[in-house]
Amino acid sequence: MKKFIISALVVLLALSCNKNSAETTVHSTPMDSMVVVPETNEPIESSTLQTCYLEVSGKDSVFVSLEDNLGTIIGKMRYKNFEKDSSMGTVIGSQYGDTLKLTYTFEAEGTTSDRMIYFLRKGENLIEGIGEQKVDGNTSTYANDRQLKYEGHTLKQVDCTDFDKNFTHK
Image 1: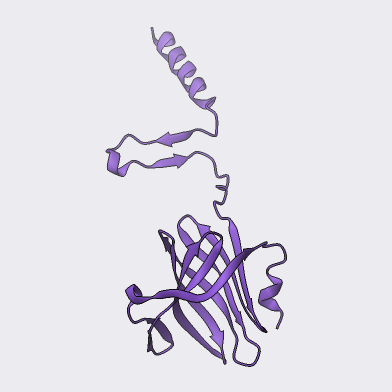
Image 2 (image 1 turned 45 degrees about the vertical axis):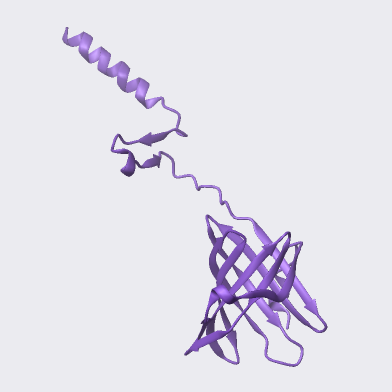
């Protein structure tokens, strides 16, 4: 009888060792705290997709490169102006319906600042929201985001190939 129990345990152990490594382990807990843990250390494939936008008006231009990283919008932005101060920095925020609500952290005139900036997605274009700003130190926010008018820069979607050169060339 002992040999039978030991043999059965060895067979069960051998079967459990032959599981496919791609399977996931689900711990039996209440539904609201269920956790799925992968059994491998392989990296999870990124869900980001880069989208690039550009507006050229005379000798001025605006460049934006965005990625949706699991619901968080991240990217780079540059205002390249001909005869006035330009700026370059990063954006981070979220999308609510067809509106991107971003914080633009940039350097201009040797100072780092933050500015709230909203874009409306219209087809393959982004239209910048224009509205009264309030400034607190180096941070600029909309005084009332419900009164924004989407009639600012209209950026058209462009190919992202070699797009980074737009952020490095003066």
